[in-house]
Amino acid sequence: MSSVGSRTAGRVVPFLLAAVVAGAAGCSSSSDGAPVTPTPNGGDGGGGGDSGGAPDTTAAAQSDFWNAMWAGDLSAGATASTELKAVVAKTPADFYSTLLVGMQSLWQIAESERNPQTAGMVAQTNAPVAAQYLQTAHQLNPSDVFTMSLLGQFLFESGAQSNNSQQVTQGEALMNQAYQADNKLGMFVPVLVGMNLPNTDPFVQSAEAGAWNYYSTCGGKTIDGTNPDFSAFLAKANSGQSGLGFCGPVAVAPHWLEGALLWFGDSLVKVGNVNAASAAYRASASVSTSSEWPHHDLLEAALSRDLNARAALYQGPPSMWPTPSAAPYGCGGCHNKTAPM
Image (cartoon, rainbow, N blue to C red; front, side, top):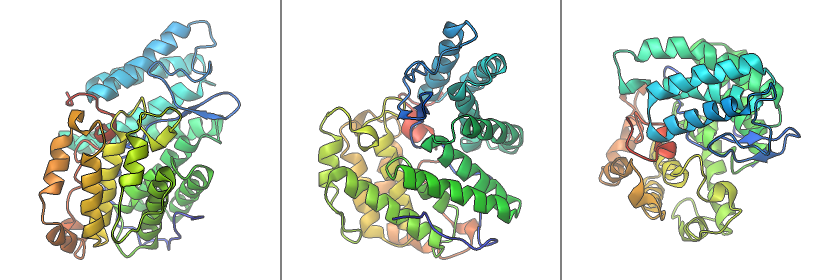
């Protein structure tokens, strides 16, 4: 697969920046652009420290962000963002801290419906911050795949919301670039974006193909998208091997495997492939850490639904489309270690 899809401007049917932008784990980079998985304190091979002479301050701010994300504590996330902004103000070249500020704002938007009364205000306040810091992070490290994906999604969705076809095109190009650079890390964001598009849109079809490629590549065995068998993928993911990258558990997103399968199942329901959707949900339940997942109840709800009836709703107008299974804990669906605060 060489593209996440082509699009004609104006065909998007978006929700208010509703894509859940950090379902996949964050990925920081070292100074030479080689991607590495960040540790809780932002450890990125030495690039996460504060070169201005206060590395402990930088590490503490980055750690506060991840602790807030793991706990699903939006208030603590906002506090961590203030700390990170202070770090960036002192060391503007700190890519990782800059990225985390952008991620934190997107997290606030993505889970704003946890309090519907303030959701609009949260989105209005955080969208400019997300735009500023994600674009800056991309400028600081243009080869980082995760930043490409997040910025691409943000531009795509905000452009669709404002009928800005140039932004939509720019956003899709970045998501394309991310997928081509790393089809494991780059496949997840297009699946999320596709949830906000009509099921006939080429983007949706291409994002689904990218996801099948991910599960096939990780498992080392091609999966039939009509009657899927996830056993090879699960054997690898549950093996406890080191060096699996995004084919296995990820430190900053301890339930990435379960959350990604839950979202993929929803995307398969959307296109009417309910047999495959059911298999994806069951695969999520078969991940070795699924019983410890604080959002296991959302998966149980998905497994108990009439998927054919749910798929039929996607044939109607967007106002009738079902709420994603992970809502309103989009980011937390993969990142939360404990029940959200």
